[in-house]
Image (cartoon, rainbow, N blue to C red):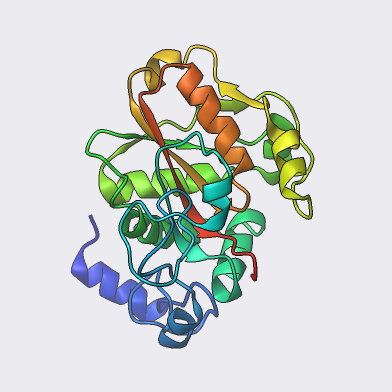
Length: 242
């Protein structure tokens, strides 16, 4: 717990900075007004399986074109941001630039966007990195997000529940079918962690949802290990025109 006087003194010496542009801002770990307006939050109607914003009105059963064509193994999905503009910059900084300070704010955004799928006793499971990639990057950005989301909601995170036992190439630039082929069978429940996910409602957490291939591979592994229901939650959703 931070004492008010100490917090005030710290803010005078190190005034809060905007997460995106570095300019002065009022609350710590927030966006300044201009950057907030330039960050595309997902609001209004969205696809109930992948979080893509949709035009018009509807309910949780609304589906985007991709989710009408593709069988999704998970039950529901949400995303906090569209992967463009300031949102894309924030995701890339979190992922590649050691910007761990972005995670707490991102966790709060994801908690708000994911409220319809975050049940009282669900388990938060991050998408894993292959060990070699984890060594190079030194941290798993999805685990940072799951931890921040856990602190925001009071839910439990299980950062070691899944493992990526086969290295896969970067999915950037690959077509949808190639993405699915690249990751199919590459993720499994970590030995000894089956009892952690068995019989549980699980929410998978990742930084970006593009085709859904990685989420699908992870969902399949969790269901095979006895998970009761799997939903997905991404910080950002890639749109076709992004």
